Length: 509
Image (cartoon, rainbow, N blue to C red):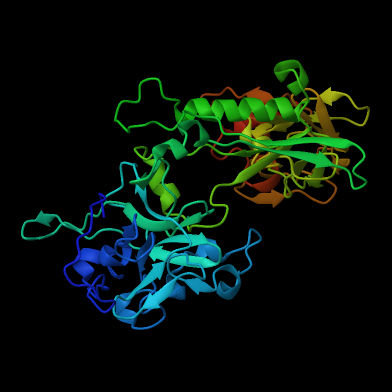
């Protein structure tokens, strides 16, 4: 009901037709649940001329709840996120919302002829919930659950009124009309991913009751010790972004972009991790939880976000704190020269309490450096030696050792400040067997067990092979693998003349 009108009665009985339910279920219009229509129509008697006293008549919105399946309404339609604890366990419906329909109190009396309730104790109003995202007509959010005081009401939204080539267009506005009691707290749950731009409106009420500056609220919680003798600091929740606009337009001028929000999140996280918040912000932050910025509804990345299952914490929350230490969880294992480690190292970033620190939200990287038994940095480590973090993990995939020796170790360094070393490891010199063919008589012979073999390949990192054949620059690892793995030396590299030059740089015993 949009306006207030005086009521003039010619004939009045309680059994008179006032509000009735609608039993329409049309998949082409309302998908798989009844349209809202008269389930969300109500009468508010301002002066008592109809009800005898000022009050309201609210519909039986829970009609056929868990009843006729054609109506598509029941416990099974409640959004999963509403019935899930943060740890993933299930919340019983009887615990969260034992009562169904629009919130009521003891003054409400059900009138069967009206299929409605007559209430005098609470003041009701129509609250409109509207998605202002660009996909408002194409992405379904319903059923939408409104929860308060143990009551849950489900809203489907309007039917499809469009016509496309003689058929309904299958486009419905994400516009939901709910009946609420003023002065009560409500929880709103969407079956689909919550819209980024949401408008809430109370129809036909004194708008001075709602101040626009109260739309965004920061929560501040003062921490105290168990003995309540001293303060343990503050927990502050805040949101960084543009203020909610009064009107949504396609003009993005002056609006914060996703890249800007990502940069801010990374900079704040880096300051906390490296313990620099005091010098940057003027006060110390011991830890911070950061929710990754999400793409705008017009961004192609938003489609991927909405395709994910809706959960209590749909968007990952990254814990960042002062980085106390790095820990090598998986140690490197080298088994063959010039080949990637058979077991690649993994390093974890933790705070003083051993909690995972999400370095991955920042641009900080981890660098791997090879050291010898005297703790000197040496060359001989190839692959991606500098990598980013994923959450609190830095997982290497292709580190390769290019030299033999004993008691090597890898030092992992973050921003030149925090470092950790791996356990020592060794790689013994690999033997090379030789073979040849006789120069006369066409016969061939293989080397005996007493043939000389190289004890080490004393070669530089790169060797230039020159011959009449087309030889190019080859890394030591590639050449070494040819000599130790293949009997036909030089195949794919150079001819025999080049191989003789190569053997000249090998020590023989």
